[in-house]
Image (cartoon, rainbow, N blue to C red; front, side, top):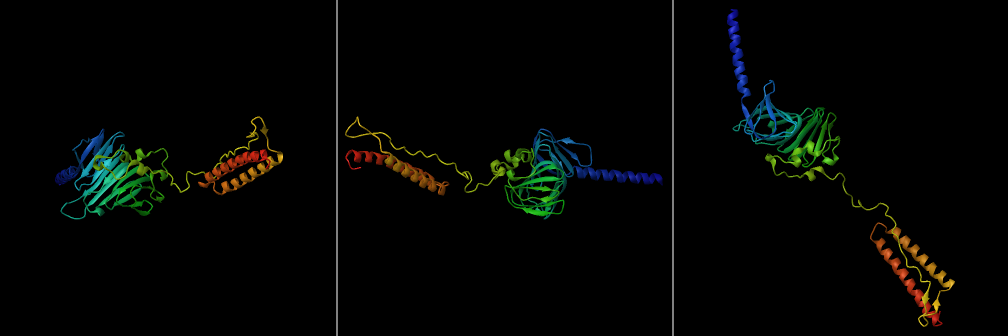
Amino acid sequence: MHAVRMLLFGFVLIANTGIASAQASNPIGSALTVVNLVTAKPASGPDHRRLSAGDDVRERELIEVDRDGRSELEFHDRTKLALGPGSRLLLDKFVYNANRSGGDIALDLAKGTLRFITGIAAKPAYAIHTPAASIAVRGTIFDLFVLRPDETWLLLLEGAVEVCANNGTCAVHDQPGKMIRITRDGIEKPVKWAGLKGKGDITLDQAFPFVASPPAIDSKPIFSRSDIAGSGEQKTEHQGRDEHPKRIERRIPAPPLKIKHHDDDDDDYRPSKRTRDRVARKIRDAVEREDRDYEDHARGSRAGDAIKKTIKVGAGLAVGYGLAKVLRGRGRY
C-alpha cells in the first residue's frame, strides 16, 4: 500500500512539474532591442538567461537590466515597453485573447525606469504596480521612475492615467508633459521637472532617460526635453524690469561763463551776478520739475522723454546767455 502511494505521488509530482514547465515556457511577447546585459529568470527560480533581440519573454519572468543596459519589449497585444538602466520588471500576469474582450495584464516595476505604450487590449485590463503606487491605464503613454520603495515618479506623455497611492489616495493625471510624485503621504499635483520636489541630486536624464534619448518604439515623441524640463519660474509682465530703477545720470549743459562780444573779439563778456543767479534759479527749477517727472515715470518710457526735455531746457538757457550778451552789447539789456 505504501508503495502504491509513493507511485501515485510520483505521477502527481511529474504532472505538476510538466504543467509548470509548460506555463513557464509560454511566451507572451519578445525582446525588440537589447543593449548590453539584460537577463530574464523565473520569479520563483534561480535560473536565468541572457536576452538577445528576438528572444521570447514569458509570464512570471523577472527582467533585469544592467546599470548600462537598455531593452525594449513588445507583447502579443502590441503593448510596448522600454526599460532603462538598472531596471527590474516582473511580467506578473498576461491573459489576452485577440478573439475575446477583456483580459488581465499586470506588470510590477520594482526598480528603475519604464516607458509604457498601450496595446490593443481593453484598457481596464492593464495594471502597472510599483512599491508605492498602482496605475490604471486609460489609453496612454507614460514613463515611470522608482527611486526607492516609498516613492514613484510618473511622467505623462499622452492620454491619461488613474493613480492610487498606498495610503488609499487616488487621482487622475491628465496633463501631458507634466509629472506627479507619489509617496507614502499621497499624490502631489502635476508639475514640470523644474517644479518637482525631492529631486536631490537626481537629474532629468537619470530619472527619465527616454525623454532625451527616445526609444525605437516611440522614436518621435510629442514633447522635447526642454518641454518636460520647464523654465522653473513663470515670467510676469514686469519680470526683468528693476523694481526700483536706478536714477539715470542727467547732464545739464552748464551756462557759458565767457562769451566773446560779436562786435569786439578782444572784449570778453561775463554775465553779472544778478544774471547768473537768475539763470541758476531757472536751472534749479527745471531740474526739480524734471526730478518730479522722473519719479512719476521712472518705470516707463517717459523717463527718457524727461531727460530729453531737460537737455532741451539746458540748451535753451545756453542760447539765452548768448542773446543776453547780444542785447547788452546793444544797450538793450
